[in-house]
Length: 316
Length: 103
Image (cartoon, rainbow over all chains, first blue to last red; front, side):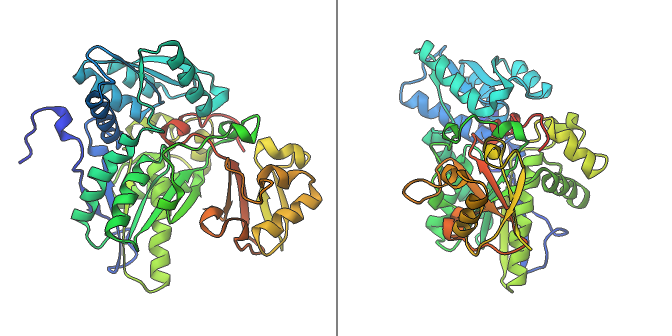
């Protein structure tokens, strides 16, 4: 049955597909969990829906309420859709240097946008949102970085779906942002299989993002619990672009650059299993498709050109 | 051969502005001691008085986070690349801020 009562009901239960051409052998297989098949096209629909429902259940969100969230992209787009269908106003705080596609998408879904200075990067936007929240005590900040419902969405849905569809899973690889996906999915899978490898891939950004005045101004999401992870990789722009292109060229899978970074780590895990003579089923998470990143120009031309064009733009 | 160490902008005051320096050692701690002898004060920015890795510092050996390889006891070898980065808010949000300034 593929009939649903409303768009919100199509959230989750995404396909898990094999990548026969990119898998190293029949014993070491790589699988992609297509989270771009969610209502607004990203994994963030799961967290948005759970965070809103939980806030409703706890009485924090009442009809007509205003939701405030620091987000540049997928979470904002997901929240905007959920807010529209549930009757809330959404205000997003984001760095002023995000791509025009994102701003257009958010406004199209009905969100209002407050820009924070680009120079402060994401940390500055989080700080700005927290400041605005104190000025508007009646606004509800769901705060994806510290909201347990974000991780719980994955504990209750993404994790069980993966184990149902791939009982032989040996590795789960995903991007590390709010850390919600890895914390929730990782906890669930590890409870069911203590030997599973939970692997994080984080993009290595351009300089400006790290341009903090002091190490003490750094930030680790409240949801993050390192004990859930087995390993954590930092993936540079060039590797992310290379793998993003490889996915579409070899398997016809059109993904965003953060997924290229995740696939880079998944491939490393698969080849490590081959070297060690072990069988493996490596599942990685496709956070979104490539549509929102076409304007970067990084899907075509030389890798060096792509790398340089992405250094000046958001790439995931 | 030596170990290549990438220095983030906020720590380059210790390296005379250099983006990358080289050092030696068998473990990350030895490497940081070696670097600190060449670039005084660097280690103190990375390691707490209690002897642990600073909470808001991430260090990677060949792109893999050292906290999952024994932290300061992680093994390093000649030819490795060590990358030091401050922790920033991540996710689609962090990526969005990935603007400007080539490293």
